[in-house]
Image (cartoon, rainbow, N blue to C red):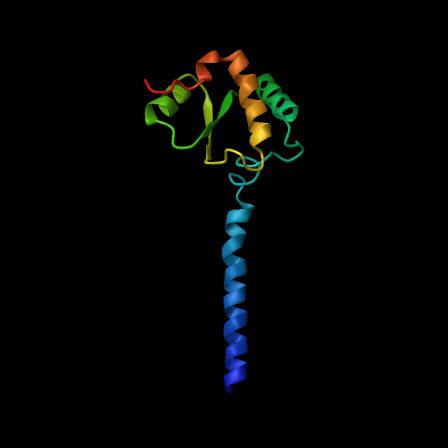
Length: 119
């Protein structure tokens, strides 16, 4: 096998491996529509509030939690029947306005959702 053919096969293999390694992460439902915006919604507070109302109508109480929340806070949410949506450090990224609207609506219905800082 000549040097050029070997190089071409090696580069093609590396490219293919890179593409295949990206597929599982991009196709996981937990990464689509949670850390960004659910399908069918826009990045607006009104859209987030609408989604929150729809979730509540189905009996689903969820709350987007940013950063590294204290374990006791997450445990409290779960014990109160709230499903935490762990957002990581999304603040200011795509979907932030949507999730701020979502959380604001949930907080208006369930004030206990608002995290207490420094306690």
